[in-house]
Length: 226
Image (cartoon, rainbow, N blue to C red):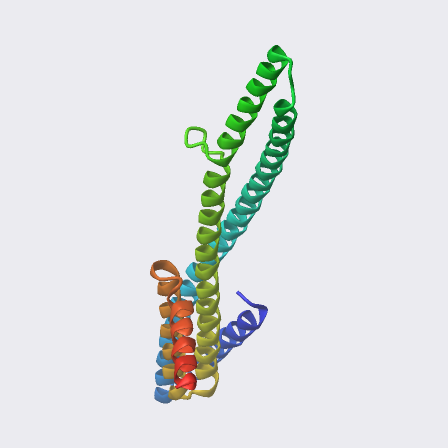
C-alpha cells in the first residue's frame, strides 16, 4: 500500500479519535462518530480487497517473468538445434557430391552410410516426438510459454488497475471522514467496485480488456474505411 494512503488513513484515525474524545456527550457528535465508524469499516473492507489484489498481482508478475525466461531458454535451444541441423545438412550435401565421383567402393559405402546417419540426425533435429526436443516441438513449447506469459502479464495489469482503484477508494473514503461529504462515500464505493471488477477480470478473463480494445479498434478502422 502506498505511503500516501497510509498518511490519509493516519489522518482519519486522528480525526475519529478527536471526534470521540472532544464531543462525547453531544448528539451531533455521536452521529458524526457513528458515521465515521461506518466509513472506517468501509476503508477496512477496501484495504482487504487491496491486499488481495496486490498479492495476486505480485504472484502473476512473478509467474510472467518465470515464463518469459522459459520461453527465452526454449528459443535459444531451438536456435542451437537449427545451427546444428544446418551444419549437418551442409556436411551431408558436401559429402554426397564427393561420393558421386568416388571409385573406391568400400570408401563410397562408408561415406554413404555416414550421409544416411547425418540425414537421420537432421530429421531427428527437425522433429523428435519421443524426446520432445526437436525443432518442431521446441517451437510449439516456446510459443506456449509465450502465450502463458502474456496471460500472466494480462492478469498482472488487471490486478494493478484494481489496486489503483482500491487505493483511490480508500483516499476518497478517508476524505469523507475529514470533510463529512456523503458524496465522497458513494464515489469511494463506486471506485472500489471498479477495483473489484478489474480484480475479477484478472482472475477469470485476463485478456478481456485487451480483446475489447482490439475489437473497438477494428470497428473504428472498419468504420473509417467505409
